[in-house]
Image (cartoon, rainbow, N blue to C red):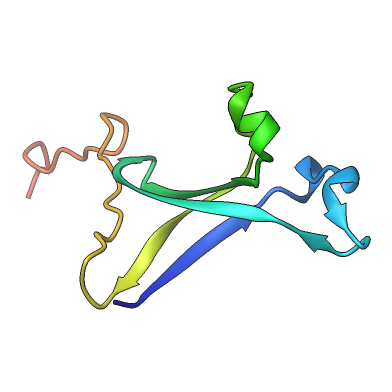
Length: 93
């Protein structure tokens, strides 16, 4: 299986105290079947066992979508909202 993911990382959300050796950031990437705004990929800081045991919420720092798959992962489809729906029946020609 292979896939290509596009992510946009909000650098203003990066907590410098989370950096290892001042330059490495441990993260987790999640790929979901459900989409919101055409995104089905998100990234959060990796949690320690203590943070997971305490059920602390994940801190998300990026989102994106799957743009290529070989097999086994679904490409994100943008959900159509009413503002995006165009009516062509009312054209005068």
